[in-house]
Amino acid sequence: SIPLGFFGGIGSASRQGVLVKGSNYLEALNAVKYVVFDKTGTLTKGSFQVTGIFPEEGWSKDKLLEYAAYAELHSNHPIAESIRNAYKGELEEHEVGEYNEISGHGVEVFVKGKKVLAGNAKLMQQNNISAAAQPKAAGTVVHLALDGRYAGYLVISDELKADAAAAVQALKELGVKKTVMLTGDIKSVADSVAEQLKIDEVYSELLPEDKVSRIEALDELKSAKDKIVFVGDGINDTPVLARTDIGIAMGGLGSDAAIEAADIVIMNDEPSKIAAAIHTAKRTRRIVW
Ligand code: ADP
Ligand code: MG
Image (cartoon, rainbow, N blue to C red; front, side, top):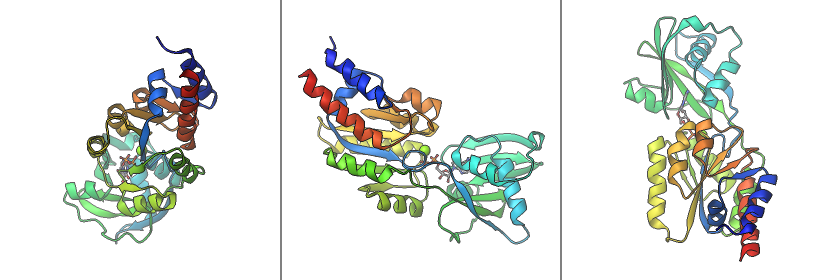
């Protein structure tokens, strides 16, 4: 039987905007020693701004942005939304043909009869396209190629969530041994975020399956009684959310798949709610035992 105190604990968590899907997760929170974060949408706002447009010779900024916006017409990725927002013209659906989203890479799509690739350096490499090696501005880079020829890149910037640094600090104070960030984004952006937030370890340019391997490596390293939390928001975080001791999803920004796969949901997307939930778990334990 479930001790009554746990219902109190789940109730008090829910009043703080943290949905705990079972008393076992509340109990497990007492033993959290590792907290692993996704970056985009979890520690950062996930609302990107296009901050630079760098066309290759023979291309204009307007044309590059137009093709990028068309290429991203059907993508739900926060990067895609920012590109569509930056483009001020009309987007006509009938101009977009066969469409393929490549998880952790970008999109491959026919626009006005041309085959467009829009995504990171990995996507360009896979298609044997030599992309600009040294982007001229800091941020996440979206490269574009049209009919197999490199056309330039956009630079996109995200912002840290207001409570991200405090969230990491609070976890340390609650006895978490190590904080880790796993991201598909490039090293320069990932390292800068981790440094600002004082996150202990950072792994960048990961594919969804690499995130799972990282969790498995951590699992082997830790002692049996210690628990790992993973916090994410994206469709491609679902495998890790399911694989970790305690999977936490962002309820507002999070994809339906992530919310479904998670054990705990933070309704208002604030990472500081992780520490609040651990705190509630510790209090609940004192009442139950
Ligand atoms: P994160 O781990 O930060 O949530 P993702 O795994 O969602 O990142 O994506 C990893 C990288 O793949 C992004 O930083 C971006 O470079 C590229 N990418 C993914 N989807 C798209 C898209 N629709 N358009 C352009 N680039 C994309
Ligand atoms: Mg994400």
